[in-house]
Length: 249
Image (cartoon, rainbow, N blue to C red; front, side, top):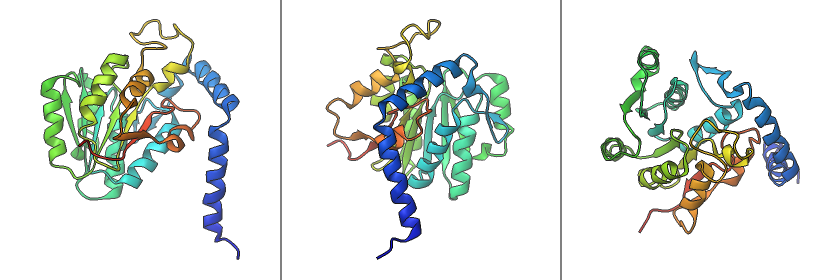
């Protein structure tokens, strides 16, 4: 019996992905490419609906798959920067339909960035909170939004030091609903040469990847989604997508 051609396509694609993510040489070559690209701030090259989005195109593709599949009605993002990511998330919720919204959190929302975000056609779906993402007041505000939502997704992209990300994971994982995800940005730092980010308070051994490993150690609520995390290959978030599989007892 012949397989349906659509089913055949997806089966072959999955096989290719599985072989690719097990190809350590290819992964290392990709990291080498990213190290070179970082010299030119490659991830600053793109916009989403006319807003600078500081992400690799591959990560944007993976994130749109994730949002479309899960259909969250609240996406919490720590780290706003120029606003492209919150605009992207809002536009995906617009495509899905319904009343979904984005809560963007940043310790310093620059005036010119706030102005551009507030003037954007997607702003009706966006709320912003200025403050430290791990502060009691900011977490309380996020909790209030989560209490009104059925499906909550979280993207962490603020301070990339180990201790800060661990605290974010502990605090915001409680808001994520079963079947949804946390995306931890910039896990690639762990795979770059030690000292590469000499002007930042993070490095090999002290970054989002090490924080995520600590958070998941013995954690029965979340698991790596390896297929989603690694299929992009050229990615700021290798192994950075984790799925909530059960609620804490």
